Length: 232
Figure 1 (spheres, rainbow, N blue to C red):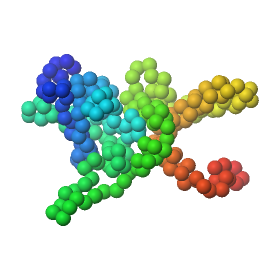
Figure 2: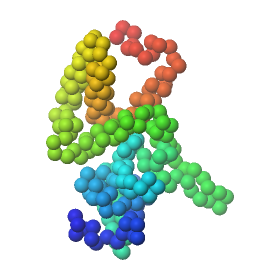
Figure 3: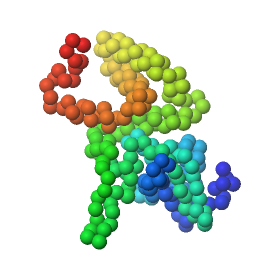
Figure 4: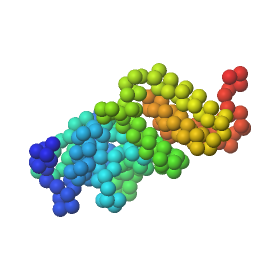
């Protein structure tokens, strides 16, 4: 990997621009910057990592939203001072909810917005605790490329039945903790149950925003809407 990185031309700040392109449609999704460490993480994990110039730290695409990018190929330009990454994009690339960051078209009579929103930013970035978003992003990352010895990776490898069994076990442990009435035990077991529920969501291809959207749909409705259907 050191030999590969030595062929690249980073700027004075140690950065190189990266154009992100949808591998299926060819649409340009976004432009970001990488430093050496971000590129190394990208190559090792198969998921895009970038360097934030404003926050001065490395970040993984989708670490908050779960909208990860699975790398299909990486290309260099002729001067080796820019990268092109072809990716499989989950949901959307732009924090505005648009599939691509380039959703505004300049025309002689002014800018025009094109395309349609793929998700509600208020739900993804404001409607759920950030820690849930980060944990879910990690879970989805483990599904895409699990390192050796990963507990979550082993759950995915074992299949849905194993995940369901764990949820059943955690539910029983939570019920026992609740019967005992110990706050610490209840908190611990709820966290365990939530975590394994996130694994199930990822296994089934569902997202946190879909769950939040369902809760928002029920909000303000009569209480039975939150319970099981009649006769259930």
